[in-house]
Length: 98
Image 1 (cartoon, rainbow, N blue to C red):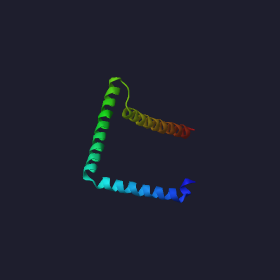
Image 2: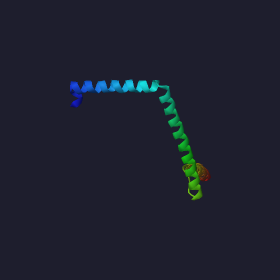
Image 3: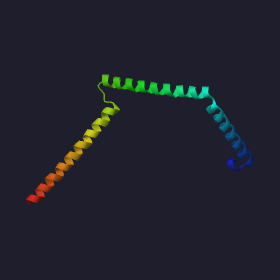
């Protein structure tokens, strides 16, 4: 209903224009871009350090990490495939003996 009102429509368009201009000004400011790159870089470093510390804590508590669980899941999938191939071979051998 409000979106159909011409006055609200125009206010919304002006707001979009202003936000676009502000974003353009910020992205053209080298200091702002460098600061944002620094923030993102530091955030990624902090996340890496946090992940490393969590893995160490899990290991100290003798609990599996996500990577440990993924590795175990892959091994189980491989084992299931091997068992399935063995079952198929046994079934084929049993059928050939009849």
